[in-house]
Image (cartoon, rainbow, N blue to C red):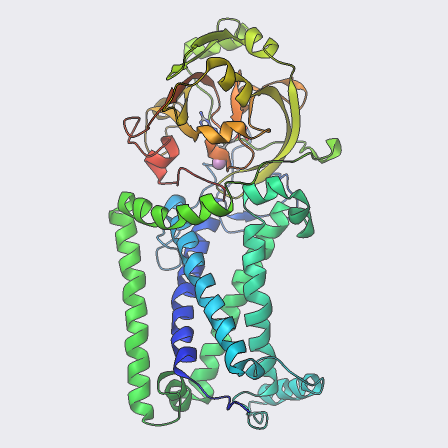
Length: 496
Ligand SMILES: Nc1nc2c(c(=O)[nH]1)N[C@H]1C(S)=C(S)[C@@H](COP(=O)(O)O)O[C@H]1N2
Ligand SMILES: [Mo]
């Protein structure tokens, strides 16, 4: 039988896991700060949260949006901290990649070498034994190790649960929060009790990891200081002082990596956005981009109150237009097209029969709502204007001046978003002029807003007045593919 010892690969994997897991926890906390409230129901209705990590209370007498609810956490708990959701997401997704690869290598080696027996029990007798072990620990004594094994019964079961249940659980509940996955496989989100339930469970998984780490570290501290360090450094019990010293060198290196990641993120966010974005994008585009939206929620699932993000244009010109039911508003569609168009609202409404869809909206910050949208499929408009060769993107320009309309947001200038032309082909990509059977309300983007159901919410520009077909977006804004990408460092492609 394979001896259940501590081979080099197991020790290296252990420390790599510490690196990725701690980066995932800190960046995960940054993501929580984006909307520091947890719900079970998909409407995320204000006041129905089961947990909140903020003391802010929202005004009841005027419009607020979910940007006002964002929190700023310290860099000690969040990566990078200080209200940097975009950068936190880049770290989280890049580290997920590293963590999954580490996990795959670990599983393969466990099963290839016979080391799986250290975790997976082969007899039911382990359960009463594990219970006895718990009682022994509670009386502050050490239970016996299993014969010829490095762990006692409760340790063996705990490690099995962490490696084969908790880690996959985090990956599956994480995937259930991807709008592309949700849009293509609505049953998968239901499996977890809905989008907000998946988010809550993912958070509870994070807490379970933190509790596990706490118990694990205190066991090392109280019960096996020298020999456990030695096993994780040399793979055998020898030179315990040296082992402890070397362990601390590794831990110091991990702390340096965390500190460097934090400083890099806070000082040069644009470079983090570009570097980590380039690492994650190929995986995202190959795995999630091909998923087309096929959602059709029931009418009774539509949220009574759909949350709002982004404040409406407050210019007089816009208000006058609104008073006249947008009779004076026009949509210009131009750029790299054979057949530019200028359309009035009634033209947009009569170009094609209205398409209606009941879909789940995912804000990048974490909340969701279900709405029914009616409008013109974007692909119909695109085929009418006839893009010229070389056309690759659609740039949506809006009537919102962020500096004027959303002064608390970082950045200023006209809100715009760039969409890959291929996303216009999704059957549920819509230019919506109706919401829940009524004309589109002002706060939701009147008279016209975009719906791209495989992406997170910020791509769906509201208050649109112009669409440009372009070959490149490097010259638009700061060249990152949208106002949010320019100013808060989100990735341009947001299938998750
Ligand atoms: N012009 C403009 N469009 C915008 C925004 C914005 O701030 N300005 N916010 C976006 C974000 S972050 C989200 S989540 C959705 C919210 O849509 P809703 O307010 O209809 O729920 O709109 C998107 N469209
Ligand atoms: Mo959002």
